Length: 231
Image 1: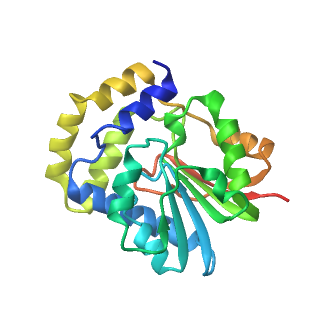
Image 2: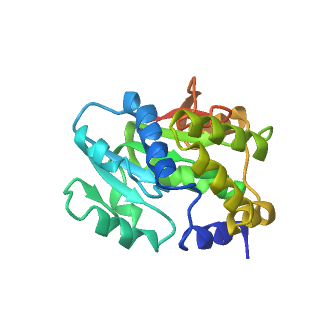
């Protein structure tokens, strides 16, 4: 089993990295607060690549966005379609080629650590094609080579204390350390990058990029980048 299929197979199952419902909801509130100042003026088209549970999609629609939700774990797509069948502004495609040149903004949040490093240029090329000239790509939750599991745990517990799900988080962490996720993280590993590496990869893919002052999401020890498609 290779790194890529291993993680996709994992996410295609009935799994979660969230310690409970309050963690899940707080996570997406935090993400929306982070991306909200970066959204274009309405109307706009947004692709959330590796969207996961995508709980912030209705908030983006309310801001005037047409939202495309895509997850490489194909088993998630029918669930997303069912969840958002009542909202005209949300589409869950199976094929991203329909979006070539259509997007004003693409979100890539907490995704690239699960992708083999050698596959990143192809993904950036795909997202470059999806964007209009001048369109924006937000890459969030970038794992640095200096980050550690203990740093992730500390960030989660600080977030849980602030958002009032601390006991839920402690119980969830104990479950996680005995879970398939923890085993997969040890056996498959996660891809990490310095900011300089990501900026260089983006430059090669046709983007002008610069780091954001803070991370998109609760993990302040990780980094985010805002990139703009040239051309």
